[in-house]
Picture 1 (cartoon, rainbow, N blue to C red):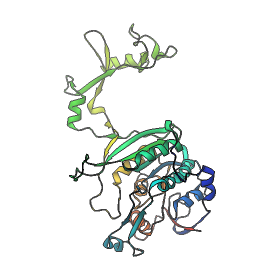
Picture 2 (picture 1 turned 30 degrees about the vertical axis):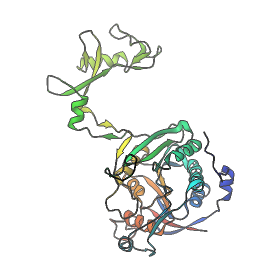
Picture 3 (picture 1 turned 30 degrees about the horizontal axis):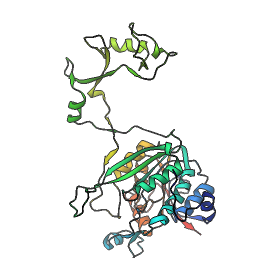
Picture 4 (picture 1 turned 60 degrees about the vertical axis):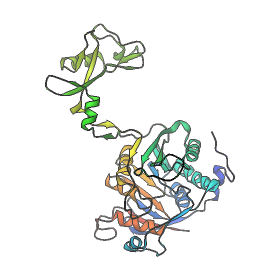
Length: 376
């Protein structure tokens, strides 16, 4: 499916029209892979792609761009003045693009981001319900419909009693795509509470331990391997295979980890106190900050979840609408390299402050990242 709108260009036209730029190092460690860059992100992305040798090197991209609200977002004077280097106009970012112009603005950047993404990489696009379905079609076009993984719902606020003839809105959305389907995935887990344990582990053994049971077989028939062979004179049901080879099943039974029904059907025991946690589902409750320094600033724990799930310690994480630097902060705390881009003076000021809060000077003694500005 292709989204058609006025002013849509070919990919070649997009690349050709982006002017070349250079980056000037201002402060920090030029040898660090972590970079904070002040500049127009489309031009900086082209530089990273063609000049910095980062094509296919980025494992994770998270972006929280403007939502096509036709508004200008400002910081309060008090907060702006509390951040060094404030330019005085308090404009955090301009969200005045709407309609086809906004869609092409997004598509231009998605095309470059796709080229920067590694074959094991993935991208998270944070957007709202008013424009998000158009963005979904654009991302299907750029990244491939088969590489769509999730439409994550983020609960952003408590219910509000707006006077309008419609349901309330407490959510926005995050579109999650892989580059190739072979993406990094470190399964995140949520801690189980007592209610979860009572609901999921209904049985109790003689020692008082809560447990449940699962089948010993799984979907998929196999005739060649050990998991398709008989065990205790039994074959797995038609169209299925044993989850473990018969030798392993025998050992599990010796350890008392297989429960036999009255009809002689075996099932594996799973104990609640051995579970690392429960699988996180596609509804995430990370509400907006109550008193953010920067407009639309996102919850640090939300970004920690995304970064930990979809990158490794040697990965580079990219946010080309980095705003207050929350993505960069999460990546830094988790030991990842990162690249943040924003053209807003106020955003850069807040990001620098956030990234260096525990340092004695702007970059402290660690020099763990470099700050650059675009020169064109």
